[in-house]
Amino acid sequence: MSSIKFPKNTNKLFWTKHVIEKMQYYNLSESRLRRLLNNPSRIEQGIAPNTIAVMQPTGSKKHPTEIWLMYCIDQKTKKKKIITAWRYPGISPNNKPPKVPEDIIKELNLSLSAS
Image (cartoon, rainbow, N blue to C red; front, side, top):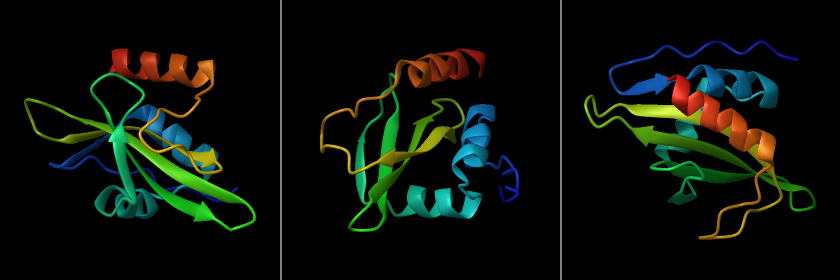
């Protein structure tokens, strides 16, 4: 597995520990996630409360996937808090939350309550 550099928090972005773990797991770089954040193919309501999900198609025609990134905006600082990112197998349905495994939901709830 290739080495992923840990992103640094800035005055505009805050990277949670959870997203850093997912970046390593899915081999997603900071630059790849920044491109997704700045130029998403789709924007939808996130699966966690008060979050935004952005996605871009990846993979091939034969084996399509999407990269998802979920964030919220801190009301005090106006920073985008990057919560999680993952590779979705296939293409997720428009305007309908994708089927997310229960363990991912639990991880997100723990991550949101700890930060």
